[in-house]
Image 1: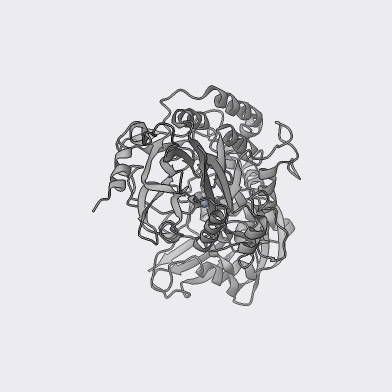
Image 2: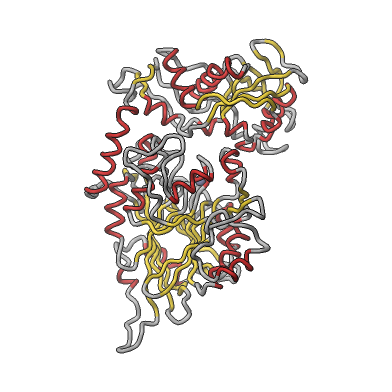
Length: 593
Ligand SMILES: [Zn+2]
C-alpha cells in the first residue's frame, strides 16, 4: 500500500513549487512554532562541467519524458537561485572535481571549487574522484595554498573551498596518525572516546549546519571501492571502510552533539531503467540501496551519487520507517530539492513532511550573468592551450568496443604508451584500461576548422583527462596471462566480460568465451613470437592499472617499476609524430567460442 508520505513524494514532481505543501502549521500566537522548514538543494557528480556538457552528457530526460539539453554552470546558478529560499542548505554528494574538462583540470579544479562556493554550497561529501590527485591535493583544495608543482593559477593564491568536505568512512591506516578532522566539532573528549575503537578519521566525518534554530547533521560517505578505482599512490595512507558501519558511528557522533535531524551525503548509488523520469524510483537495488536501507534509523534522508543516475525512492530504515533515497544524475544536469520539517521540541525530522523533487537544469532559462562571466574568464585563460592543434585524424577514431572488446581509440592509446616508454622504460608491450578512454575523436567536429580532422590539445585531453603517469613493470609470461584472465570479472560461470584491456599493436592473443574461468587466454605473442610462462616482459600501462586499478591485481606482482611521461603527453606526442593518423584495426585479440 502506498503510504501518505510516498504519495506526497510522487506528487512533488507534478507540483511546480512545493510551497503549498510546505507551509508550516500556523503557529499559535505567542508560541514558538512546533516545526520549522528546511530546504536542501543537492548536486552530485558535477565533474567540473563549467561549460554546458555536450553530446549525451548534456541531455536529460525530464519529468514529461522529453529529452532536453541540460547542465552548464551558468544554468545551474540560475536554477539554484530560483529554487533557493531562506530555509535553504546547499549540499553535494561527491565527484564534483576529478575527471573534469580542461577548463577546470588545467588548474587542478580550482575553478570548479570556486564556482561551487559562489553557488552557495555549504557541505559536500567526498567522492572517489576527489582523490584522483591524492589525499594531499584534496587537503590543499579544502584548505588553500598554491599547487606544489604547478604553482598558483592565473587567479592567484588558492583560498580553499568555502564549503565543508565530509567523509566518515575515510580513515588513516596508521592508528597513531594525528588528525585535525574533528577540530571544531564540539565535545572533543567524548567524540574521541566514541571514535577510539573505530579509527582515526582522515576527513571530518560530519558537518552540522543550523537552520531556523535547529541543527542539521550531514554525514559524508564515499564508496568503499575507492581504492580499486583511484590511483593507489595518492591514497596509500588511507583506508576506505564499510559505509554502513561508518555512517552508524557518525550518526552516534551527531547524537552526542545533540543533532537528531540527520542527512547522509553518499557517494555510492544504484542503476535505473534507461529513459525513466528523474522522479521515478525503480532503482535497481545495489550498493546504494544496501546502505540506504541499513544505516541507523536515526538517519532521515539519504542523498546519493556515483552512478550518475536520477531517481527518487523511498526505502525502509531498519526500524521500518520510510526515508528518502535519491540521486540527481550528473554533470550539473539535475538539482534535487528536498523540503522537510524539523520538530523544534525533539530536533528530529518529521519523516511524513519530506517532499522531494529532481529538477532538470534546463538551458531555456537565462544564464546567470555573474557565473557566465566567470566561466568565460576561465575559458579565455585556457584557450591558448585548448585550441592548439596537436595532430590530425583521417577518420573518426572511436572508443566503441568491437566484439573482441578492443576499440580503435583504446588501441591507439596503447600504441602511444608503448612508444613513450620504449626508450626509458624498455617497454615491450602496452595495455590500456578501456574505462580510461573517456571520449571519441571525431573527424567532423575536430579542431579549429570544422571537418578537417584536426585534433586540438583540448580534444586530446577530453580523451585522456586523468593526468596519469605511464609506467612500466616486469611481469613473467605467466603473470601477464593472470592479468589477462582478470579481465573476465564475472567468475567461473559467467561468460560476461566488462574490462578488456586495450593491447598495443605488437601484442596478440586469443580468448575463449566458453573456456573455464582462469583458462580463457591462450596463444599470447609479442611481435609474432610466442610468450613463455617464465619469460620476463616489460609491460607499459598507466599508474592506475599498475597500482592494481579496476581489480587488475596481477599488476601488483610487477617488479622494476619505471615511471615515464603523463598519459596525455604520450598521447599528444604520438598524434603529432604520426600526422595524419588512421584508426587502428581492432584485430589484436582473437575471440573463439
Ligand atoms: Zn564516483
